[in-house]
Length: 400
Image 1 (cartoon, helix red, strand yellow):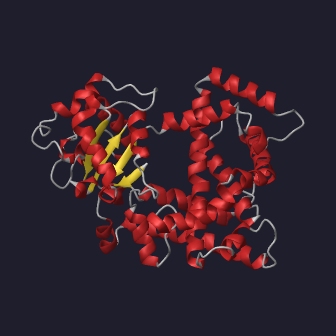
Image 2: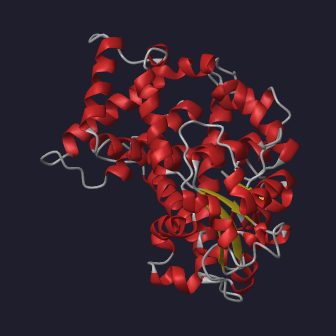
């Protein structure tokens, strides 16, 4: 979870208390055991005694003026190897540490029981880190914010619209046939392209599978990405998403306003990627609305537009972000699940046995089957827990 600390006073209080008193913390989860060094880490901090109620009491790597810990991170491999540096920092400073990368100030948490306590502090509306390169683009092009960027009541208003259609289990099970249609094609493709059990770029293949699936759900349209001759427009969308994701990181630690005013190469590439993403999504959305003016029962986009108070601009933003999630987030989670299962053959065998027990040989898997697959759910949750253990709270400098 990511949040702007200056907007979440209860989180500030939580971090203040933990920075000076982890030894008094009682876990609310039995799976978390704080090490002794974590319990006394804040006491060792040279600022703890005099500034006990300040975020400056939280230990962390050296914070040089302007650059913060950028030079130290660069020696550890830079932003591309940041995950390895964060593991080292947690070993050195404990479960909570503070890190400043140029203009980006953050508090990092790596402990299940502390995360549980933090999540329980959330109010009705979650508040997250502002991704400034993304908001800068939306403002530049006068595009609306979607669920990835909205906060407070606006976030709840938009989310409630999609919750009715895409987040209720009773609605999701209606999508079984579409999900399975794409999945069968994906398995067929994997069988054809693997060479001695090896696939050249599994992640990209998963990107294409997840894109095909979300587009079939949203637009009731297939783009042929799992065939030999692929749709160039759809491939450009996937490439643009990857480009957008790879270029915004540096603009989080250096002022995006500076990149914008100087029209740096990074800002140009980032903007061009977003232009491609939005223009492609708008073509799909408009085509769906035009071709389905009679309002078919499975017209998801038409239902959302006509049965809610969303504007056309808000619809564009929300659907575009759903497509991005379909390309990147789903594929990423699936890739880690496959990787983690491959490293645990015992878990893989147990999962396979559960699937065979629940799904008959002549049946296709469906949502009803998942209700009887507790080990499948456990594997997915454990993969996401194991592969993404760290919580970062951004913007803490303004809260001190």
